[in-house]
Length: 408
Image (cartoon, rainbow, N blue to C red; front, side):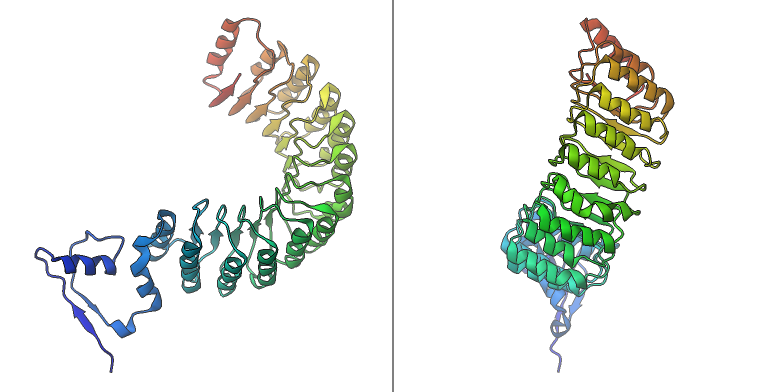
């Protein structure tokens, strides 16, 4: 026989026990007017009993429970970014994921995960068919945690986006993850601030061959010319790739040349900032981007390309009227290079971002301003443009109706 307990919350002034009961029944709305409630203790689900403890959770975790369990329109995102959750808090979150089967995005970035928690997380996600986006950036994944991740990844058949940046993974650990993703539905991969090396580069080449990546971020991953050589051919064949971020890697002249010769024509956004490019490799970049007819964003800061390298690049960009964002800060560009920028602006009518900070533009910088139409961000800091403070002020005020962000 089912044992039932009837609880009647009177409309008169509630007693202390009434208030306590009401908070248990709805921990997020303890001040609602009392309502008659009938609970069958034996029929209460584990998830209903579990929600009684929600008020003791950290705010980030409470917010997740409120949006998922108590909203009229439940969220499909579990996001606890940088919440500094304790091991016990993570247990509570994993309990939620095991019982709630409508989550498409799970963001745990910035929370340290032990191997045991990674294993429990992946077991919980593997039971769901809806997970598309998994963010494990800066989670301190160790070797055992990576192994648990790799064992479960093939079961996440709907996964499209994976973030594993800032985990300081070794080439061996990265290689394991890349191999676990082979043949998956993955379209976006963020794996910056790890170490590629030969082993991971070879596995990455195999991944490129079996997936249709659209976004790839490998910034500050110790990619060398040897690494590029290992995956260059399959990179060229990846004609779904739209965004490629390889900034802050020691590519130097040979690596940049290899990369530029193997860029797929589909690339729309390219970041090769601080890769040790130099003037000679900049010429190769100019040749490489000539075939990128969809490109709208190019970043090449801190590469010492000089006016000669800039000339090769702008010559190719003149053919690309879709260019919206261009950044070439700290590149030894002088007034001659400033004239090249003017020529580019005469052709490109809808540039939104222009960053030329820390270049010796001199007075030509003022002529560049004359050709800006729809600019949203302009960075001319330390460009030695001004001989008089009043001139600086004059141009600042002149730009107020053209831009929302001006740096001089």
